[in-house]
Image (tube, rainbow, N blue to C red; front, side, top):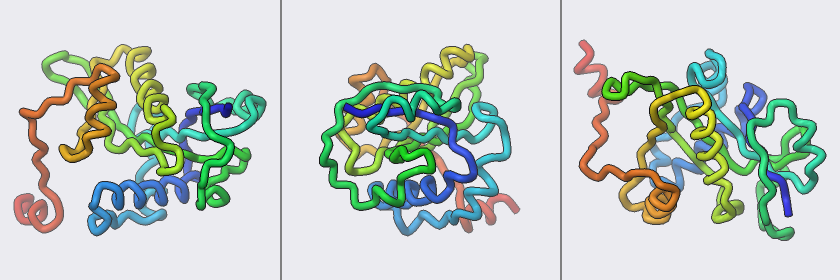
Length: 198
């Protein structure tokens, strides 16, 4: 058994965050679109208090419950059954100062529902590193965001899922999320954004 804990990320965690964003982009077949640097993440992710602006939560794994109990910034913790011999080639890089292994993250920010007349949270990215998938860790990250939203009286938590990612779609549906196939994402970016914005 191991302990999974979720905490609010800080600027010292940027190397982990940047590496996982690059891994996520590769998984989503969008590596060419991922141009963010550690410096850019450091200067843009931590400009507002948690849950009031961009917020990143890290999920860490430890073999000792004592190291989790010592974490004053812990938002959630749960005992999980993780094999002792997980093949994690990046374990040394992802071992934090506290000795816990960073296994995943969720990045979100406030949004607003005019229909509900309430603020909510929009999840931009949710990612669990490959060696730690199918262990319930994504569920812990989502549950932490949902619990915080509910405790704050927010109207909803929403996110997008790629239509080819059947495992994720099934996972979200099993947790009770509605997958809305009639909605499409519209995006202005790069040259199109500049051209339309002038």
